[in-house]
Structure formats: C-alpha cells, structure tokens
Length: 312
Image (cartoon, rainbow, N blue to C red; front, side, top):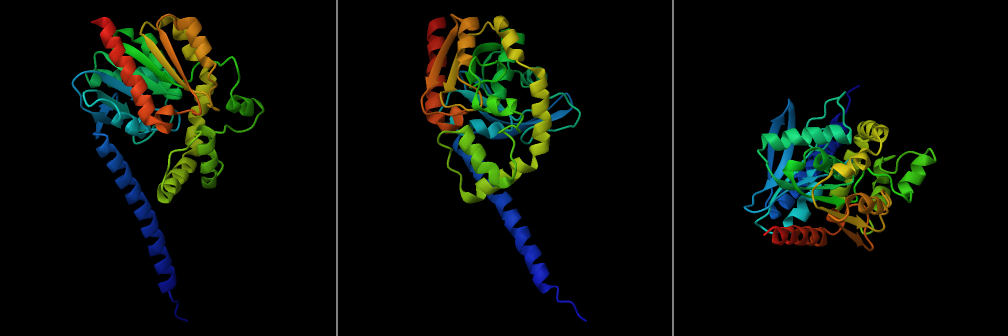
C-alpha cells in the first residue's frame, strides 16, 4: 500500500511557515521600534558573558536603564524615543534575560546583577551617569547607587523592588497564600491575564506579536521561576542599603500597581529625605515607562534638567 505523504508534508510546511513568519514579523517589528527611537543594537563581552544592549547616542546626559523581572531592553524603547536627542541612552539585557547569555548555575540575585552591571559600565567606559530601573531593575539600580556612588549622578526608580511595602500588594497577598506567583504564566493563553495584572491600560500588541510574546513567556516559565526563587530568598536587600545612597533620587510609581504597593515610597521618604522626589501616577500600573512612555520620559527629562540647573 502506497502512503500519501502530501497532506502531512503540506501541514508541516504550513506550520513551519507560520512559526517562521511570526518570528520574522516579531524581529521586524522590534527593529522598527528601535529604529524609530534611534537605538542601535550592540553586544559586549563582560567577564565571559555576552551582553546584548541598545544604545542611543547623545552628547549631554547619559541614562543607563535597567529592565525588570522577565523583561528585556525593549521595555525602554518607546520611553527612549521621547527623551531629548541630546540624551545618550543605554539599555542592556541583564544576564539571564532577553538576548544576553543565560548560563545555568549562576547567581541571579539583584545584588549579583548590580555587581555585573558595574563591570558592564566599566567595559563601556561609563564614568558618571543617571541610572534608572523598573521593578527588579529598580532594585538593582538602587543597589548599584549604594555600592558605586561615584558613578551615579542620580537614581531614577520606577515601581522598584527590594523594599518591603508597609501595605502588602495584591501579588504579595497571593504569594503568601501559597499560590504561584502571578508573574508566571500557567499557559500561553494566560498572557492576557498577566497584561491585565501588570497594566491598567495594557499597551496595544498586534495579534501575531501577542502570540509570540505569550509563547515565549510560557516557554521561559521554569527558567524565570528559578530566578524568582533566588530573588525571594535574597530578601529586601535594597532596603538595607538605602542609607548608603548618596545620589539625588526620583521615585515614580503607578498608584494601581498590583505587583509592588506604592507605599514603598513611604520607606524611601524616611530613608532618603531630603534628596528624594516622588511622583504618584493615577490610573497607572507596574511599569509606567511602558504604559505611558511619553509622560515617563517627560518626568525624567524635567528631573535631569532641573538637577543640571541646580549644579550650575
């Protein structure tokens, strides 16, 4: 009996083309976003690890922006677009995330990443700059500012981790009940739930991009869970180091943040006054620089320019 392989071969070809097209469309879309923000994709080897990062050239101020847990350098792409052209912006993928190396057995705690970030800045020859971070990246940026004060002109925190909030967040309540973290997908279809948990108004994503990110996030679930376990075990390390931060600090928070409650800013006010400025944004979630990149960039721009005027 002769087997007809044509239908099977056609199906395999169709699936291959669908996957290939989705990946190609994703890369094209991301490349276009970076191009519109004047960002160039680069890579550098730091202590045996390859770091991928984007950079916008500038002649005045330099901002080093650090993404959060499960994120990557493109969390800052649209934010960078709204900053003055004179600002230099560098946004790395931390090891373990994005397109950077992800060796198993490495320490991925916030403090370990802050020390790696220092080596990254040394390789790039960065002397003095503003460092910004969101969520986990905010915790890393804060630790960096505490440990390497001579490099940091100012610290900019977006809904940062590393500090225990006086009022538990919705995520803390869920995790304390013994349920899995809301940051980890249970299936690709769970991606919409994650977007709704993170944002008040989730950024628009075309269907093919949403499918791509959903599948990618679910595929990385166990890897991300292992890193999250390390961070949870590390504890609130930034809170212990706040007293060491010398740089003027801007803290921006979404009032509707379900991941980290905005009352973390009360702790910052106790420890960082008078060199702290805070902004609480109504109807905003956990990542303002994604949810409203134009407003976030304006707040950061005004902050930096005001600091410049004060030092002149």
